[in-house]
Image (cartoon, rainbow, N blue to C red):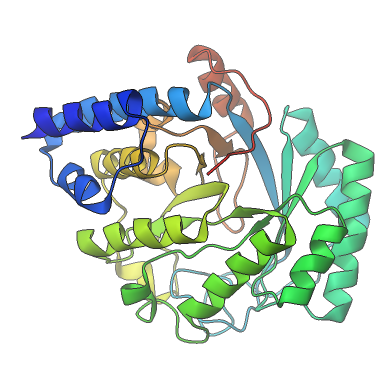
Length: 332
């Protein structure tokens, strides 16, 4: 079954040039572990055919860390949990610009400013608009923002200020969402995603795998990610943080992570599929394999509250794989 399913998928995506339906994706989710490398190889072919050879690298900065009023059970920045991460003030403009310059020096094209908040108030909006202009003018980087739930008016205001992408992850499926978050709804996240696209910004909408969701719920998530039509999908894997409700979970296995990287690529052939949080502990020495399983972008350096590996390691990996670095925009 595994071989015929992979052959069928190849014909659909490479010969017929059509997207898979959810039943076809479900078959791939059930193939034997021994066939996962073949699945990954096909996903790499599909990435090259639909999205091209370029790899986009991005730096992210936690400009306002900790003290978040939301109860996302995976997040050490929630004020509701007793974690080592404590609330800190908004970084000043010089600190943000310094981080952006470091990102630009790596050859990145995107810089994401991240705030641990439910959503921006008026003062925060003004600071984000100021920082977007500063970073864009001084570094030439595209500026992305991740600042929680937006109103329609805020989305249009950020777009007018020059924000290139807005990040707002669905994280998990609608049916599993209330087991992970209770202080806001799945529909609020979807609404923000729709406002972002309506305003003309590129939508970055990611997933977080390994929180206890079922295979069926991951397939449901694929359908729901498709429905909001993102330009970029960050692939996050749970890194259980001390003090959070999900500290009891074990990290996803490396082969399972490769399977789902490949499945997200095959389900979303033209998106920017970005390596994000948790890849170091999940994939360990198999990170290069992820790059040949459908990934075509990565966050370099540290994440919001956890350490990544040294940026030079990722740059060396891309050199070894002969993957050119550049800027991407996906057409869904």
